[in-house]
Length: 249
Ligand SMILES: *Cc1c(COP(=O)(O)O)cnc(C)c1O
Image 1 (cartoon, helix red, strand yellow):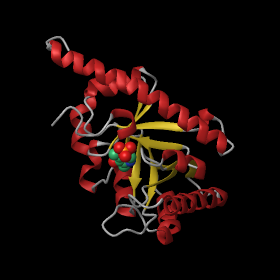
Image 2: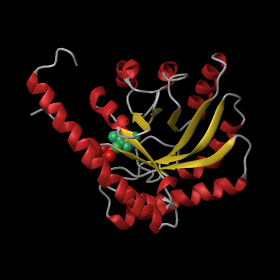
Image 3: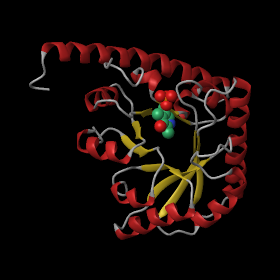
């Protein structure tokens, strides 16, 4: 920041102010949805989805109280890693993950939200064990059964949970989903409610090593809906940081 030009710094200041204003609105809407679904505002975690967002802006939101951030690309996470204010914030990985990239995440992220195969879980457990630690994960469900989309198919979820529960250095903390984009509200609500059913159902099974602490669903367009359906962790990018081409033409 030392060599920043005046123009850049005023742009950054404008952006800081926008984030502060956006965060207020998001917190209010989250609180309202929490209360409407019989919970307390503090029961719902806001995770800032930080892809393409400069670290200065991310760190500003951390100063404003954001205590969970998530990246969805391993390379971007690696490039930004040393600059995040992780003394005050948990870093999650939320994007599609290939087995050969797991090594860049284990020991660095507090949670991997996007585990959708036994092979991937095995690799996370193997590398975690090597480092003498245990990695928290969420199992991602392809709730809309969309082709070319990450996530385990709902009908295969029990089998995957069963397999993952026996791995030594992984802890399942909940479920994650991204329903089909742009669907009508009623359809989106249907998917969110289905996810909540799986969440509640899995919790009642009390499987070893499988805790249903987090139901991660809801993004900028639908986080209030997701919370009303039972989500307790929402992942928000655009509504907090602005459109992703922010500052470019
Ligand atoms: C980008 C992203 C989000 C946030 O999306 P917005 O619509 O910008 O809020 C949430 N989850 C994942 C996995 C993402 O990649």
